[in-house]
Length: 328
Image (cartoon, rainbow, N blue to C red; front, side):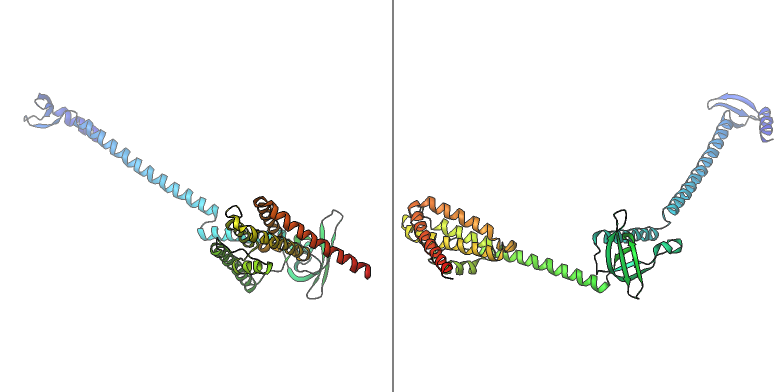
């Protein structure tokens, strides 16, 4: 209807060409509009309607995306709290599984048994404390356990999946953590003490004339077997015959002291073994052997003289023991 009215109005107006282009003039000669404006107005109106429809469609898409996001959140658990709770449950189940795998159940061990698990409705679990009274294998070679519960009840042939360690109390867990922490701190302190001792070991030593003097020197400056070996190496390095031929006599005596040290360490291995990572007696023997070899290279005649005297002493000691055996 509006379009028909507009067309009637246009029919009443006369189109004229002016400096401003084609215009409509009324019967009085007044310009009432330009030719083509009505088309622009229609275009602007249609474009604005399209923009409005685009905005509305964008809002609809946003609404749909929000709905999809909320639905996806619901599928994933609905909230961060639920997700974290699920993670914690997974961790707890993993810890329980690790406990079962890590522990080997033996006779006399205190455990928890899932009492008559096959008879429970809906797979419910009932864990009770008890003692493993027997460990054996079924026809398939899998371990099964006989358990005597604290209330006096007895169950035999419990499969491994239905046996677990007794959960530790908070006090026990805290105590174990403290013990681990203390052990770690003690280890670090010991390592630092070793490092300080190693740094404090002098580079220059006087040559000890007796085995007791060498042991006193080691007790003063060493905390480990490697420190003792380092002291012996530094005694040789700073008093070598190659540095000063006047050291020949005292280094010959030190060669005999080292042989006696070698025998003492060997006797300790025979009675007490290697001595752990702190003593490492086998490594001490290796270090002494290398030092003796180096000293033999420095002065072969001194080494020969010491070995001749020491072998004579060994021979006399062996002969005396042989006589003592014959007498008894």
